[in-house]
Image (cartoon, rainbow, N blue to C red):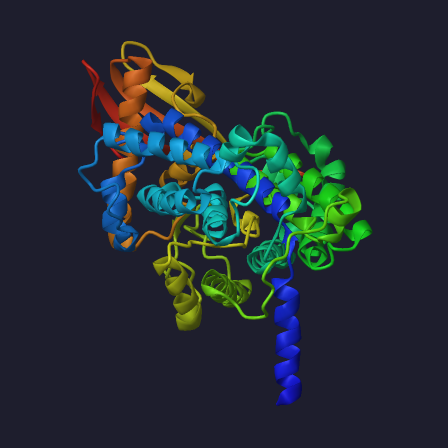
Length: 504
């Protein structure tokens, strides 16, 4: 028993060992800039996805997912109110960057982001997951000791001297890095369950998805090079999670940082998931967490920090959340991908088979439920579902009036992640598992909003239909894959700016 107590005390002592305060606040500044950019994009897209009359049917979403209720954006919320909340969020993000009550601002922003992703639950994706996770840890991290604008205004030289030697307790820093390691490990190992990843063609399929910036450029001739990158991803991604625990060693840290930069910037350059990937890169300053790195660059001795091997309030919260995440993601690793579609016997993707949000039984539901009650919606299995989603999609609007004509869909709908996820419900492969009794209502609401936007933007008079060509992406196939054409939405445009939706 004494040996057990001694081992626990030694582990806790290593957990609370001081880290450079400057590096923690570098993370804070970068996180504030990331959240600022996140809400600037939300403001720019408010008419598309977030506003009262946007493409996302928020009322239908709340009816289908009652657990997404939140008080900030009620059913009667106007676009002006939503915009005002987003502008306030930008101001709070700037305050975090400047070091003005950063933890308080992060807590308020965390509540806003939680309400935001629940408001947009139908099109929530990994960008939203990582942004609100970053804000959660920003509340717990010991930020605000350095890189504060008020200190620079009052006494810049004294502030710079103090920042160089300042240290803080490292408990929350190490717990956050443990969370990041879990993310990499689960995302990487889950790909080994995918036949397409194991065969080497998964990255090719990802590059051909609708939200890819290079979908029109990639051809089967790219397949050999992409297979090399595919294999590298399967090896490097889970190893990033392991390497984080050894990042105090300079050579490991150098390889880790180089791999993270190449891995995430490569994704940012090709697929519309910027905030998730940049959010992971924010952790790089925290990898340089040894106080010895300060001692080598400063002749001033580090300021003393309380390193009592006993967890404090915020540290208890961080440890509990990390334990819950380990349990939830451990269960998720053994759960079949719930986003897989059911075939209808005609080669057409259809609606999702039934199940809970994670389809992992009572234990997994309990883990995810507790996290959800705290505002955290996390899922680290990424792109292992590509075997069921490897479709290249071509979209167009067909207008039938005095003369029939086709119009590229990107004149109405941007080729971004949220648009692709929204249209997936109309194509039969739902992004979120919609309860069957609500599926028709959700699809009809999306169809009506899509056709209404098309009528308004294109200023046409007549019947308009959104058509999609689906084609499986398989660069190894000897013959071209068969193409399936679906009508995703149909409506009748009536001047001025009105539409009568006729869902297929």
